[in-house]
View 1 (spheres, helix red, strand yellow):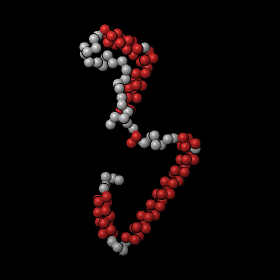
View 2 (cartoon, one colour; view 1 turned 180 degrees about the vertical axis):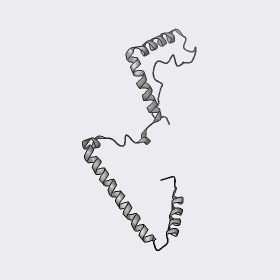
View 3 (spheres, helix red, strand yellow; view 1 turned 120 degrees about the vertical axis):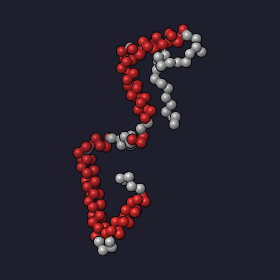
Length: 131
């Protein structure tokens, strides 16, 4: 809320109460309560209007799945990289690379050298449960 923590809010409310004074404080509290009621009514009316306008489409949306706290950046990157690889497999480019890498690996001894990016034919291994 505007970068104000609980202690700062309490101090601001105390200063406001001192500046406003005890004579005018009940009137301002009543005015604030009216604003809160109006804001609540506007939010309720807006929700009803959105539900009416969207109809059945609003009921089909899984809002929990769209929660940004549930996104895993590693999965987003992996999916984006896999989307880029999929069209090249359709053209045969990845298959040709995999075939060439497979013959090169078959000819080389097992303990000769670690795998390089060129020798890897598939997506990088990914552990969904890793932290």
